[in-house]
Picture: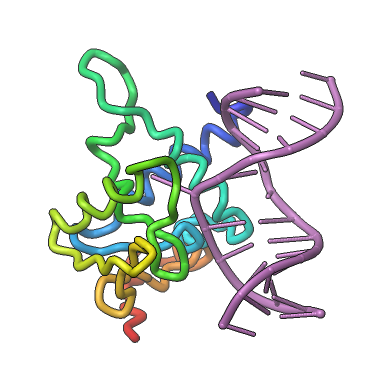
Length: 140
DNA sequence: TTCTTGACCAGAT
DNA sequence: CATCTGGCCAAGA
């Protein structure tokens, strides 16, 4: 549970932003933080996804793992961040299921080519307030 | 209550 | 190249 209204806003904003990531594309924790106007908090984006509730029929959770594509968020180096046993593997499986090529390194590292699958709209908070129609592709 | 631990990141060493 | 550092703040011990 968030400890304040500000924190609650943050959780909801993160989930809503993640829902904007197109199918078959990935982005980074840092980029989500940037889009929300808080570039200093990529870590809190990870915290939010970690706390994302599982879908359970009958609950009133607005956001859960069935309507928030948590698997499309990876770290800035293009790697799926390692965590509890099987966690990263589950994320890789979910991504491959939607057509994303995930390379497995010799040490089990799971990497994704951001040049191909990266989703980095140049939408910034200030512009977002002015124009709601700034769509650009920061290709490589 | 305080202290430690993270699904992170960019810049400095 | 590899490591370390400071910043962030929710949870768990």
